[in-house]
Length: 192
Image 1: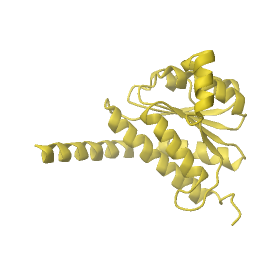
Image 2: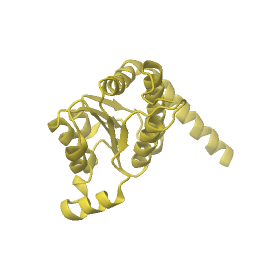
Image 3: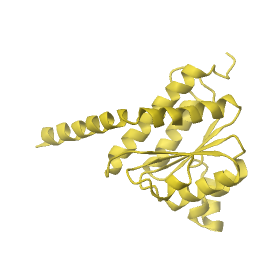
């Protein structure tokens, strides 16, 4: 029974990755958003909840630390400062934990990557709205419907699956693709 489950799960992931091949052009466009932002001296801010928060932290760490070479590109996960998150949640409500940070830390030319499998996480949607107000570019990573996040993003990558776990697998894989694109297009800003 468990071997059947394992094979079915892995096959489902393979089929979803094959579907994503049909989206190569928008995926490349999203990578260009990352490259253009960093090339122009901007930073990439990431926001998400739960597993998407973990993806936000993971991708920010890849850019700041090391993907395959010492990067040092400016990136920040808005999910990591517990003092800030708890103060904002307490004082303004959980819906504003990311948007208040975007308004304080974001600048025109920066990029906000909002990660929400439903496309409707209120705090991610509010962050996308705040990024627009600040003159930032916005990229939404969602599940198959896109939700409200789609309308607030310059580009929305909708993973065609109803399963959160599969959508999150693809989001992380796409993030790694974009890190590869950044590394191949830009010299590392770090001086060794």
